[in-house]
Image 1 (cartoon, rainbow over the protein chains, first blue to last red):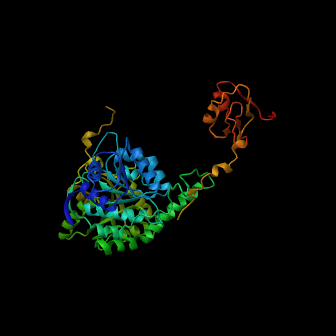
Image 2 (cartoon, each protein chain N blue to C red):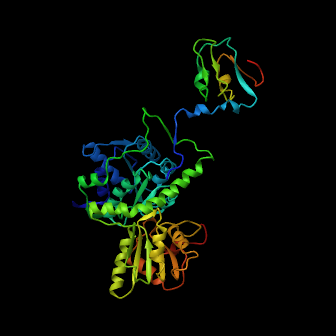
Image 3 (cartoon, each protein chain N blue to C red):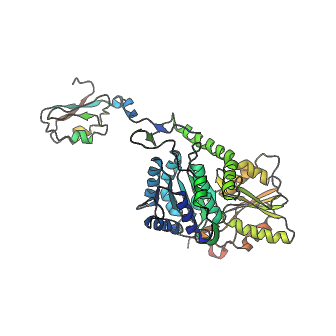
Length: 393
Length: 87
């Protein structure tokens, strides 16, 4: 049913339909409304789940780790500093191959303290063994949670999934969203049947020590599983489309890129702004396009290569920085074209929207304009030079 | 694909940690023991057993020789002795 909802309400609605047995979270802006809504649903009986209140995100992550290990569906959500406090547990959840699903309401990292949106939090945990799906709008954010449980709980995969949605822009934005029926959700997501779980009648140990004789294989297995997920993605999204009618293909979207001479590559909600700019430019005869990457982990390398190899000028925009080196998404896209016969003439890097700096259509137009010159390596857009000084004071 | 993930319970017994001892081992003197069980509770290996006074012993197959039992014993009824000493 189509509903007019705040992003956080929409996420709570879809999580309710996914019926997690255990929810544990610690409130943090801009994630708060999601778990606030879920807590209400649990307390008024709409959702039959254990809502475990905890004293920190480290505990929240530990609760969902332990609960997931008993073989039930679990959910948590966090943001920014909260995700960092969870960090060691986040790596453990993936290493223990537990199908936890988490929403990350993307927010900047301290210091200075900043509660507004960029993507530094989840990007910083990109190597944790979690899938990371980035949503452009509320419908995608809702749908990706269904895909998240589907992939995570697949007995072949058993890996956790982080659904990343831009803080405030999506979590507090209001849009019309199609919330699927319970019957359809049940069809897509059968009751979770754990291939291994803690059971006093059949004891086993999870999270054991793995010495140098064993550790490397645990990492190799996760790496291979990501490849297997990429191979199976079209089948999973086809099943999703057959039930819900929306198509996500290989979790990349090539928007007006086929004949484009300039393309911006991006993650998340900024893709919507770029599409508006592209649409306006197309009316004036400029051949611009967008490549939206919905699956950052696993990173669909070959598909991105194919999508960009014939584009003359490419811009990669990052809402995060790797301080002291190339921007995170940029370095990965750039690496795809090393020693390849076909490649864009230039692949430029732009950093924008950090700490909630507004990204206007003009910001995007500036990027397209700058693409007509030489390759740019980490150009900050909408920077205020008047705030910068050479000395410490 | 999966790597090593699941351990069988109780498998720690296969690892005879007694070979880790370097030089000293506990000797239960069995003279002034009051059966307070402090040695049992504090032993990090869980390898000390006994019920009545002066009946406590450790399993040398697992005792790492850390000396915590000797240190915690309120009656000084456990000594750390040289590995070679007959008990």
